[in-house]
Length: 355
Image (cartoon, rainbow, N blue to C red; front, top):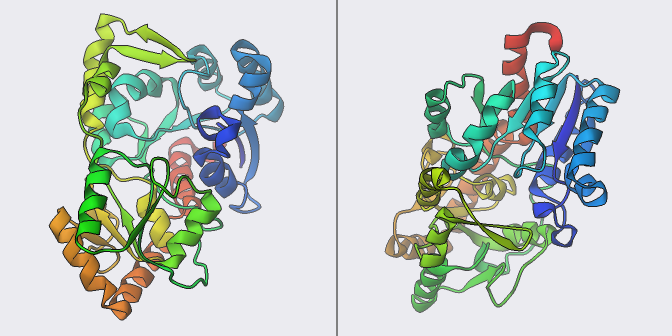
C-alpha cells in the first residue's frame, strides 16, 4: 500500500516551533508500520513557504500523478490546500483521499463541515462528532481517536525527582488550580509557556513523565473573556485582523462555545504510553478508552484532586499497578500504528482491492 502523507512538517507551520504533531505522530508512525506500507511525505508548509500557495498546490497534484499512491492521507491545518485541489484528487478515481480531522468538538462547525465533503473518507477524534457528520449527509467517517507513537512516547528508567508535574500552557483555570494545590502543601512543578520553568522540548517532556510520581492532565478550558469572544467576529491571519462575514458568525459562535468544553487530547494517551501514572480531569467518552481507578485516575474537582494526589503519593505500589495497566491498554489498543491499521482496514472493506 502506497501512501502520500500530506501534512505540516513544523508545528503551526513555523520552523522555530520544532517538528509538528502530525510529523511526530503521523509520518513517523506510518513509516515504521511494516514493509507492506510505503510512505511518501509531502510537507506542504515547507513548500508553501518556499514557493507560495498556488505553486505548492500545483506540486501536490504533480506528486499525486508521479507517485500514484493508493491513499492520499491528509492532515489539514487551515486552508493552505485549495478545495479544488482536493476535489480533483478525490474525483480522479485513481487514489482514495482521507483526512485526519482533529479537535472536531470545536472545529467542526466552522472548519470540518466545509472540508469533509471533499474527501472520500475522513476520521474524527470525537465519537460524539459522528452525529454532526450525519447531519450534513456525510457517511464515510470513522472514529480515529487520539493515541501515541510508541517509538517516541516510551518508558524511561529514570529516578522519580518530581512528586507532581504538569506539562502544558499556563492560563486562567490552570493557574487557579495550581495555586490551590500549592496552598494545600503539594509540591508541583509545571512546565510550558507561562510557567516559571518555561517551555520544554518533547524529549524533555517525555523524561518528565518518567521522572514524576504523579503526572497531571488538566482538561479545564479557558474562561470566557471579551478577547476570546472576539473570535466569533474577527480573524487573525498573517498578522492581519479581518472581519468575518455575518453568515459565518453563527458557526463561529458554536465553535467558540464548544471549545470551552472538556475534550480528550493526545496527552490522555501519551502519559500512559510512557508507563507513567496519570491523574486527569474527565472528558466526554474518556471512560470508553480507560477503566477509571484501574488504568488512569480521574478527578472531579480541585478538592478531589488534592485528596487523590495526597493518597497516591503515599501508595507507590498502587500507583505503579495503575500505571502498568494503563500502559498495557495503550500499547494494545491506542498506538497510532494500531489506529491507522484499523482505519485502513475499514476503508479497504468498502473499496475492495484498491488498498
